[in-house]
Image (cartoon, rainbow, N blue to C red; front, top):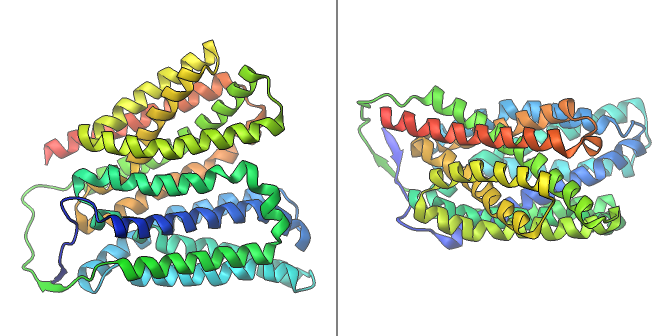
Length: 401
Protein backbone atom coordinates (compact mmCIF):
# COMPACT_ATOMS: atom_id res chain seq x y z
CA UNK A 1 0.00 0.00 0.00
CA UNK A 2 1.26 3.46 -0.85
CA UNK A 3 1.03 5.69 2.17
CA UNK A 4 2.29 9.11 3.12
CA UNK A 5 5.10 9.79 5.54
CA UNK A 6 4.10 11.42 8.75
CA UNK A 7 5.33 14.97 9.07
CA UNK A 8 3.68 16.09 12.29
CA UNK A 9 6.53 16.97 14.68
CA UNK A 10 7.02 16.81 18.42
CA UNK A 11 6.28 20.50 18.65
CA UNK A 12 4.85 23.16 16.38
CA UNK A 13 5.92 24.04 12.84
CA UNK A 14 5.20 27.71 13.41
CA UNK A 15 5.89 28.93 9.89
CA UNK A 16 3.38 26.47 8.46
CA UNK A 17 0.87 27.25 11.22
CA UNK A 18 1.18 30.94 10.32
CA UNK A 19 0.34 30.03 6.72
CA UNK A 20 -2.69 28.09 7.91
CA UNK A 21 -3.71 31.03 10.11
CA UNK A 22 -3.60 33.20 6.99
CA UNK A 23 -6.01 30.80 5.31
CA UNK A 24 -8.29 30.96 8.36
CA UNK A 25 -8.20 34.76 8.21
CA UNK A 26 -9.09 34.69 4.49
CA UNK A 27 -12.04 32.36 5.12
CA UNK A 28 -13.30 34.60 7.93
CA UNK A 29 -12.90 37.69 5.73
CA UNK A 30 -14.87 36.00 2.95
CA UNK A 31 -17.83 35.35 5.23
CA UNK A 32 -17.65 38.81 6.82
CA UNK A 33 -17.87 40.50 3.41
CA UNK A 34 -20.55 38.13 2.17
CA UNK A 35 -22.81 38.48 5.22
CA UNK A 36 -22.46 42.26 5.12
CA UNK A 37 -23.25 42.70 1.43
CA UNK A 38 -25.69 39.90 0.60
CA UNK A 39 -28.85 41.67 1.90
CA UNK A 40 -27.95 44.75 -0.14
CA UNK A 41 -27.20 42.73 -3.28
CA UNK A 42 -30.45 40.79 -2.96
CA UNK A 43 -32.43 44.03 -2.89
CA UNK A 44 -30.51 45.46 -5.87
CA UNK A 45 -31.29 42.45 -8.01
CA UNK A 46 -34.96 42.43 -7.05
CA UNK A 47 -35.28 40.05 -4.11
CA UNK A 48 -36.34 40.72 -0.53
CA UNK A 49 -33.71 41.23 2.18
CA UNK A 50 -35.41 38.44 4.11
CA UNK A 51 -34.21 35.96 1.50
CA UNK A 52 -30.76 36.24 3.12
CA UNK A 53 -32.04 34.15 6.03
CA UNK A 54 -33.31 31.49 3.65
CA UNK A 55 -29.96 31.45 1.86
CA UNK A 56 -28.18 31.08 5.19
CA UNK A 57 -30.27 28.02 6.04
CA UNK A 58 -29.71 26.45 2.60
CA UNK A 59 -25.96 27.08 2.76
CA UNK A 60 -25.70 25.51 6.19
CA UNK A 61 -27.77 22.48 5.16
CA UNK A 62 -25.43 21.94 2.20
CA UNK A 63 -22.41 22.33 4.51
CA UNK A 64 -23.75 19.55 6.75
CA UNK A 65 -23.28 17.19 3.80
CA UNK A 66 -20.28 18.71 2.04
CA UNK A 67 -17.91 19.27 4.98
CA UNK A 68 -17.61 15.65 6.23
CA UNK A 69 -17.87 14.25 2.69
CA UNK A 70 -14.98 16.31 1.33
CA UNK A 71 -13.02 15.91 4.56
CA UNK A 72 -13.28 12.14 4.23
CA UNK A 73 -12.36 12.23 0.55
CA UNK A 74 -9.30 14.32 1.34
CA UNK A 75 -8.26 11.66 3.85
CA UNK A 76 -8.45 9.02 1.12
CA UNK A 77 -6.52 11.20 -1.31
CA UNK A 78 -3.91 11.92 1.38
CA UNK A 79 -3.50 8.18 1.89
CA UNK A 80 -3.20 7.24 -1.76
CA UNK A 81 -1.63 10.17 -3.63
CA UNK A 82 0.08 13.36 -2.54
CA UNK A 83 -1.90 15.17 0.12
CA UNK A 84 -4.95 17.37 0.66
CA UNK A 85 -3.91 20.23 -1.60
CA UNK A 86 -5.88 19.23 -4.71
CA UNK A 87 -9.04 19.90 -2.69
CA UNK A 88 -7.63 23.05 -1.11
CA UNK A 89 -6.41 24.49 -4.41
CA UNK A 90 -9.59 23.63 -6.30
CA UNK A 91 -11.83 25.05 -3.58
CA UNK A 92 -9.80 28.23 -3.10
CA UNK A 93 -9.64 29.00 -6.84
CA UNK A 94 -13.32 28.19 -7.47
CA UNK A 95 -14.57 30.12 -4.45
CA UNK A 96 -12.42 33.15 -5.35
CA UNK A 97 -13.73 33.22 -8.93
CA UNK A 98 -17.34 32.82 -7.84
CA UNK A 99 -16.90 35.41 -5.10
CA UNK A 100 -15.99 38.09 -7.65
CA UNK A 101 -18.87 36.96 -9.85
CA UNK A 102 -21.49 37.57 -7.13
CA UNK A 103 -21.37 41.41 -7.18
CA UNK A 104 -20.45 41.49 -10.88
CA UNK A 105 -23.79 39.93 -11.82
CA UNK A 106 -25.67 42.58 -9.86
CA UNK A 107 -23.53 45.52 -11.02
CA UNK A 108 -23.04 44.77 -14.71
CA UNK A 109 -26.35 43.21 -15.74
CA UNK A 110 -29.96 44.29 -15.99
CA UNK A 111 -32.22 42.60 -13.41
CA UNK A 112 -34.46 39.95 -14.95
CA UNK A 113 -35.95 36.63 -13.92
CA UNK A 114 -33.12 34.70 -15.57
CA UNK A 115 -30.42 36.91 -14.04
CA UNK A 116 -31.98 36.52 -10.60
CA UNK A 117 -31.85 32.72 -10.81
CA UNK A 118 -28.29 32.84 -12.13
CA UNK A 119 -27.36 35.04 -9.17
CA UNK A 120 -28.88 32.58 -6.68
CA UNK A 121 -27.13 29.68 -8.43
CA UNK A 122 -23.75 31.44 -8.20
CA UNK A 123 -24.28 32.27 -4.51
CA UNK A 124 -25.16 28.68 -3.61
CA UNK A 125 -22.33 27.30 -5.75
CA UNK A 126 -19.91 29.64 -3.99
CA UNK A 127 -20.98 28.28 -0.61
CA UNK A 128 -20.40 24.75 -1.93
CA UNK A 129 -16.93 25.73 -3.12
CA UNK A 130 -16.18 27.10 0.34
CA UNK A 131 -17.06 23.71 1.80
CA UNK A 132 -14.64 21.93 -0.52
CA UNK A 133 -11.43 23.22 1.04
CA UNK A 134 -12.14 24.29 4.63
CA UNK A 135 -12.03 20.84 6.24
CA UNK A 136 -8.96 19.63 4.28
CA UNK A 137 -7.17 22.90 5.06
CA UNK A 138 -7.86 22.98 8.80
CA UNK A 139 -7.00 19.27 9.04
CA UNK A 140 -3.44 20.26 8.14
CA UNK A 141 -3.07 21.51 11.71
CA UNK A 142 -2.61 17.89 12.75
CA UNK A 143 0.34 17.70 10.37
CA UNK A 144 1.95 20.92 11.57
CA UNK A 145 1.79 20.27 15.33
CA UNK A 146 2.28 17.33 17.62
CA UNK A 147 -0.75 15.99 19.44
CA UNK A 148 0.17 17.58 22.78
CA UNK A 149 0.83 20.97 21.17
CA UNK A 150 -2.35 21.21 19.10
CA UNK A 151 -4.08 23.72 21.45
CA UNK A 152 -1.07 26.03 21.30
CA UNK A 153 -0.94 25.87 17.50
CA UNK A 154 -4.71 26.29 17.20
CA UNK A 155 -4.55 29.47 19.27
CA UNK A 156 -2.94 31.27 16.33
CA UNK A 157 -5.85 30.28 14.08
CA UNK A 158 -8.34 31.38 16.73
CA UNK A 159 -6.48 34.68 17.10
CA UNK A 160 -6.44 35.56 13.40
CA UNK A 161 -10.06 34.58 12.81
CA UNK A 162 -11.10 36.38 15.97
CA UNK A 163 -9.35 39.62 15.01
CA UNK A 164 -11.13 39.68 11.64
CA UNK A 165 -14.48 38.99 13.31
CA UNK A 166 -13.84 41.67 15.94
CA UNK A 167 -13.89 44.39 13.29
CA UNK A 168 -17.37 43.39 12.16
CA UNK A 169 -19.34 45.82 14.40
CA UNK A 170 -17.09 48.84 13.78
CA UNK A 171 -16.15 48.46 10.10
CA UNK A 172 -19.53 47.95 8.42
CA UNK A 173 -19.86 51.49 7.09
CA UNK A 174 -16.26 51.58 5.89
CA UNK A 175 -16.53 48.25 4.06
CA UNK A 176 -19.83 49.25 2.47
CA UNK A 177 -18.31 52.54 1.33
CA UNK A 178 -15.68 50.67 -0.71
CA UNK A 179 -18.29 49.21 -3.04
CA UNK A 180 -19.24 45.59 -3.62
CA UNK A 181 -17.07 44.86 -6.67
CA UNK A 182 -13.86 46.22 -5.12
CA UNK A 183 -14.49 44.58 -1.73
CA UNK A 184 -15.33 41.16 -3.18
CA UNK A 185 -12.32 41.35 -5.52
CA UNK A 186 -10.06 42.24 -2.59
CA UNK A 187 -11.39 39.26 -0.61
CA UNK A 188 -10.78 36.96 -3.58
CA UNK A 189 -7.16 38.08 -4.00
CA UNK A 190 -6.59 37.61 -0.26
CA UNK A 191 -7.92 34.05 -0.51
CA UNK A 192 -5.77 33.21 -3.53
CA UNK A 193 -2.73 34.69 -1.82
CA UNK A 194 -3.38 32.74 1.38
CA UNK A 195 -3.78 29.48 -0.56
CA UNK A 196 -0.54 30.12 -2.49
CA UNK A 197 1.44 30.90 0.67
CA UNK A 198 0.08 27.82 2.44
CA UNK A 199 0.99 25.60 -0.52
CA UNK A 200 4.47 27.13 -0.67
CA UNK A 201 5.09 26.58 3.05
CA UNK A 202 3.67 23.06 3.21
CA UNK A 203 6.51 20.55 3.66
CA UNK A 204 6.76 17.84 0.98
CA UNK A 205 5.42 14.39 1.67
CA UNK A 206 7.15 11.38 0.17
CA UNK A 207 5.14 8.23 -0.58
CA UNK A 208 6.39 5.10 1.13
CA UNK A 209 5.39 1.46 0.91
CA UNK A 210 3.60 0.34 4.02
CA UNK A 211 2.00 -3.00 4.83
CA UNK A 212 -1.49 -2.38 6.17
CA UNK A 213 -1.99 -3.35 9.79
CA UNK A 214 -5.16 -4.97 11.00
CA UNK A 215 -6.38 -3.03 14.04
CA UNK A 216 -6.58 -5.09 17.20
CA UNK A 217 -9.14 -2.83 18.89
CA UNK A 218 -12.27 -1.18 17.48
CA UNK A 219 -11.98 2.49 16.64
CA UNK A 220 -15.60 3.28 17.54
CA UNK A 221 -15.54 5.72 14.63
CA UNK A 222 -19.34 6.24 14.36
CA UNK A 223 -19.56 7.12 18.06
CA UNK A 224 -16.66 9.54 17.76
CA UNK A 225 -18.18 11.23 14.73
CA UNK A 226 -21.48 11.61 16.57
CA UNK A 227 -19.65 13.24 19.48
CA UNK A 228 -17.89 15.61 17.08
CA UNK A 229 -21.23 16.50 15.50
CA UNK A 230 -22.62 17.25 18.96
CA UNK A 231 -19.53 19.24 19.90
CA UNK A 232 -19.70 21.37 16.76
CA UNK A 233 -23.40 22.02 17.29
CA UNK A 234 -23.13 22.90 20.98
CA UNK A 235 -20.03 25.09 20.63
CA UNK A 236 -21.56 27.06 17.75
CA UNK A 237 -24.92 27.49 19.47
CA UNK A 238 -23.42 28.32 22.86
CA UNK A 239 -20.90 30.77 21.37
CA UNK A 240 -23.51 32.68 19.39
CA UNK A 241 -25.74 33.05 22.45
CA UNK A 242 -22.83 33.83 24.77
CA UNK A 243 -21.68 36.84 22.74
CA UNK A 244 -25.26 38.11 22.47
CA UNK A 245 -25.73 37.72 26.23
CA UNK A 246 -22.54 39.67 26.91
CA UNK A 247 -23.77 42.46 24.64
CA UNK A 248 -27.20 42.68 26.29
CA UNK A 249 -25.97 42.49 29.89
CA UNK A 250 -23.20 45.00 29.24
CA UNK A 251 -25.69 47.38 27.66
CA UNK A 252 -27.88 47.13 30.77
CA UNK A 253 -24.92 47.50 33.13
CA UNK A 254 -23.52 50.61 31.43
CA UNK A 255 -26.82 52.00 30.16
CA UNK A 256 -25.14 52.38 26.76
CA UNK A 257 -26.77 53.21 23.43
CA UNK A 258 -26.46 51.22 20.21
CA UNK A 259 -23.59 53.34 18.88
CA UNK A 260 -21.50 52.82 22.00
CA UNK A 261 -22.16 49.06 22.00
CA UNK A 262 -20.38 48.65 18.65
CA UNK A 263 -17.11 49.84 20.16
CA UNK A 264 -17.60 47.78 23.31
CA UNK A 265 -18.27 44.59 21.35
CA UNK A 266 -15.16 45.32 19.28
CA UNK A 267 -13.09 45.39 22.48
CA UNK A 268 -14.76 42.25 23.86
CA UNK A 269 -14.25 40.36 20.60
CA UNK A 270 -10.59 41.36 20.53
CA UNK A 271 -10.26 40.16 24.12
CA UNK A 272 -11.76 36.80 23.14
CA UNK A 273 -9.33 36.55 20.21
CA UNK A 274 -6.21 37.33 22.24
CA UNK A 275 -7.34 35.18 25.17
CA UNK A 276 -6.84 32.18 22.88
CA UNK A 277 -3.05 32.49 23.25
CA UNK A 278 -2.81 31.90 27.02
CA UNK A 279 -5.73 29.46 26.82
CA UNK A 280 -3.87 27.39 24.24
CA UNK A 281 -0.65 27.48 26.25
CA UNK A 282 -2.41 26.41 29.45
CA UNK A 283 -4.42 23.69 27.69
CA UNK A 284 -1.16 22.30 26.36
CA UNK A 285 0.09 21.99 29.94
CA UNK A 286 -3.01 20.55 31.65
CA UNK A 287 -4.55 18.70 28.71
CA UNK A 288 -6.99 20.05 26.14
CA UNK A 289 -9.92 17.85 27.14
CA UNK A 290 -9.59 18.75 30.79
CA UNK A 291 -9.47 22.43 29.85
CA UNK A 292 -12.60 22.12 27.69
CA UNK A 293 -14.57 20.27 30.36
CA UNK A 294 -13.52 22.73 33.04
CA UNK A 295 -14.32 25.65 30.76
CA UNK A 296 -17.77 24.32 29.83
CA UNK A 297 -18.68 23.98 33.51
CA UNK A 298 -17.18 27.30 34.62
CA UNK A 299 -18.67 29.44 31.88
CA UNK A 300 -22.18 28.34 32.82
CA UNK A 301 -21.52 29.53 36.38
CA UNK A 302 -20.11 32.89 35.25
CA UNK A 303 -23.07 33.52 32.94
CA UNK A 304 -25.56 32.79 35.69
CA UNK A 305 -23.68 35.09 38.07
CA UNK A 306 -23.72 37.87 35.46
CA UNK A 307 -27.43 37.34 34.99
CA UNK A 308 -28.14 37.98 38.67
CA UNK A 309 -25.33 40.41 39.62
CA UNK A 310 -24.78 42.24 36.35
CA UNK A 311 -21.91 42.33 33.84
CA UNK A 312 -19.17 43.12 36.36
CA UNK A 313 -15.64 43.40 35.02
CA UNK A 314 -14.30 40.40 36.93
CA UNK A 315 -17.15 38.19 35.68
CA UNK A 316 -16.59 39.34 32.10
CA UNK A 317 -12.87 38.52 32.34
CA UNK A 318 -13.55 35.10 33.84
CA UNK A 319 -16.19 34.37 31.21
CA UNK A 320 -13.90 35.30 28.34
CA UNK A 321 -11.03 33.23 29.74
CA UNK A 322 -13.13 30.10 30.18
CA UNK A 323 -14.86 30.64 26.84
CA UNK A 324 -11.45 30.63 25.17
CA UNK A 325 -10.74 27.12 26.46
CA UNK A 326 -13.84 25.89 24.64
CA UNK A 327 -13.49 27.90 21.46
CA UNK A 328 -9.78 27.25 21.02
CA UNK A 329 -9.92 23.62 22.11
CA UNK A 330 -12.58 22.41 19.69
CA UNK A 331 -10.38 21.81 16.62
CA UNK A 332 -7.56 20.15 18.62
CA UNK A 333 -10.21 17.98 20.28
CA UNK A 334 -11.50 16.84 16.88
CA UNK A 335 -7.99 16.04 15.65
CA UNK A 336 -7.07 14.15 18.82
CA UNK A 337 -10.20 12.01 18.80
CA UNK A 338 -9.33 10.04 15.65
CA UNK A 339 -6.20 8.76 13.93
CA UNK A 340 -4.25 10.99 11.55
CA UNK A 341 -5.77 9.05 8.64
CA UNK A 342 -9.24 10.37 9.59
CA UNK A 343 -8.34 13.98 10.42
CA UNK A 344 -10.26 15.47 7.48
CA UNK A 345 -13.39 13.49 8.28
CA UNK A 346 -13.20 14.51 11.95
CA UNK A 347 -12.83 18.21 11.13
CA UNK A 348 -15.60 17.92 8.54
CA UNK A 349 -17.96 16.35 11.05
CA UNK A 350 -17.21 19.09 13.58
CA UNK A 351 -17.96 21.75 10.96
CA UNK A 352 -21.12 19.84 10.02
CA UNK A 353 -22.27 20.25 13.62
CA UNK A 354 -21.56 23.97 13.41
CA UNK A 355 -23.52 24.15 10.15
CA UNK A 356 -26.44 22.30 11.73
CA UNK A 357 -26.46 24.90 14.50
CA UNK A 358 -26.34 27.66 11.91
CA UNK A 359 -29.27 26.18 10.00
CA UNK A 360 -31.47 25.76 13.08
CA UNK A 361 -30.52 28.99 14.86
CA UNK A 362 -32.69 31.38 12.80
CA UNK A 363 -35.56 28.88 13.05
CA UNK A 364 -35.52 28.76 16.86
CA UNK A 365 -34.41 32.38 17.37
CA UNK A 366 -35.98 34.45 14.57
CA UNK A 367 -35.99 37.56 16.80
CA UNK A 368 -32.81 37.14 18.85
CA UNK A 369 -32.54 40.87 19.59
CA UNK A 370 -35.85 40.79 21.49
CA UNK A 371 -35.09 37.63 23.46
CA UNK A 372 -34.70 38.13 27.20
CA UNK A 373 -31.23 37.39 28.66
CA UNK A 374 -32.78 34.96 31.17
CA UNK A 375 -33.81 32.14 28.80
CA UNK A 376 -30.86 32.94 26.54
CA UNK A 377 -28.43 32.38 29.40
CA UNK A 378 -29.92 29.03 30.35
CA UNK A 379 -29.94 27.82 26.73
CA UNK A 380 -26.31 28.87 26.27
CA UNK A 381 -25.32 27.18 29.54
CA UNK A 382 -27.10 24.01 28.39
CA UNK A 383 -25.26 24.11 25.06
CA UNK A 384 -21.87 24.41 26.75
CA UNK A 385 -22.84 21.62 29.15
CA UNK A 386 -23.47 19.40 26.12
CA UNK A 387 -19.96 20.28 24.94
CA UNK A 388 -18.55 19.11 28.26
CA UNK A 389 -20.59 15.90 28.07
CA UNK A 390 -19.33 15.13 24.56
CA UNK A 391 -15.70 15.70 25.56
CA UNK A 392 -16.10 13.56 28.70
CA UNK A 393 -17.78 10.78 26.73
CA UNK A 394 -14.89 10.76 24.27
CA UNK A 395 -12.49 9.90 27.08
CA UNK A 396 -14.65 6.90 27.95
CA UNK A 397 -14.51 5.68 24.35
CA UNK A 398 -10.73 6.05 24.21
CA UNK A 399 -10.36 4.04 27.41
CA UNK A 400 -12.47 1.27 25.88
CA UNK A 401 -10.17 0.97 22.85
